[in-house]
Amino acid sequence: MRIMLSVAYDGTGYHGWQFQPGQKTIEGELNKVLSELCKSEIKVIGASRTDTGVHALGNLAVFDTDLMIPPEKMAYALNTRLPEDIRIQKSERVKDDFHPRKTATKKTYCYKITNREFSNPLERLYSYFTYVPLDVGAMEEAAFFLEGEHDFQSFCAAGSTAESTVRTIYDVAVKKKEDLITIEVTGNGFLYNMVRIIAGTLIEVGRGRLLPEQIADIIKAKDRRKAGPTAPACGLTLVKYEFVDKVPTMK
Amino acid sequence: MRIMLSVAYDGTGYHGWQFQPGQKTIEGELNKVLSELCKSEIKVIGASRTDTGVHALGNLAVFDTDLMIPPEKMAYALNTRLPEDIRIQKSERVKDDFHPRKTATKKTYCYKITNREFSNPLERLYSYFTYVPLDVGAMEEAAFFLEGEHDFQSFCAAGSTAESTVRTIYDVAVKKKEDLITIEVTGNGFLYNMVRIIAGTLIEVGRGRLLPEQIADIIKAKDRRKAGPTAPACGLTLVKYEFVDKVPTMK
Image (cartoon, rainbow over all chains, first blue to last red):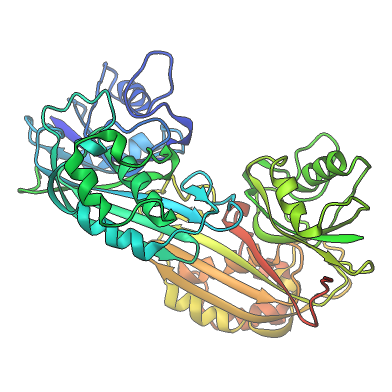
């Protein structure tokens, strides 16, 4: 049977999601612990191959097993074996042909910025720090131009293998609470580094180096060099996946 | 002249505040970096000697120097030399006889609890995790009994050298936001492990093992064994110091 895991992790100590020989990766840790538990070689299929240093609250992974543990108990069995910076949040049975990257989903990412005079050591691992005061109102205005279906080639890092660079962004919410700014982006899919380039571009707007309405021109240009820099990985967290059609779980 | 530093740190990697030969401590790091900067041996006087693993947003320290750096620039000079898990938030000149432990202050601590089915890796270093659902309403009721001037002997760990165990708590606020419970305590001073014992006792109330009104009996008993366990250090953050009389700074 096929089991789906919802996986939360602190990406600080990992070379990203994807398995690489000799490197500590989230996928590598999951494969190792699952193979031990199931006493056969297991390779998970992940929904999002997050980069080095990116965090997640709800990435997804599936694997096949004949192990006679009730699917919903799998989370407990795995968590006792996993390092404390990876925690399964849920385990459930899905249809045998369910593939997390070939299913329509809404994905939500959150980019965090600590904006104050000096860095806050308690936020340093999970947010990008800048002492330059950011204009959150301008960032909100700029965010509006990103919403909808667009060709996001300007927001796609070199080296992407995506066939199409058209994506739909349902919502970009910029909020400030005390000295923490969050950019929450929900879309039907994201190109390579797309959320970090969106964050980097909105930061340029917040600094006054770009005007909100220039976002429309940047999208139109289909040129990566027109957008802002790629914001650092540590600020990014993959928050959740939602299924557009019916949930693929089986009872 | 005497300089006062406001110090924020992630206590995860430190054996607490107080200097100990051969151990990594906050005071030890500050003394080392200040002595390098000032080119003479500097020993800071700290306001609170936080325990191993306890965090701070605004602990205080003072030291004396003849260095010709403007006091308010000292924070920048130190931050470029300090490890990234310690960050000076402010540096300013104070009166030469100002002593941070011999001055009337209000101190605020925050204890954080992650209360959900599985631990959140992004909160694991800065909160205590329990999957047992806590009754926040009962914890709030219990908190009320702690406010005011009391003999807090029941909430003082063995080994304390305090002359009196009478302290005043101005406020205990228990709040819940999503799966994060915070206990914010403000008082004129705290006994050894007092905030962690308060947190441990309120957690017992939240679990239903103690009734809110039993807090009054626990205080009356003046017996450490009547209170709850000492909650783990990682959940505790020293938030701020406020001066009761006039601020001791000099321009």
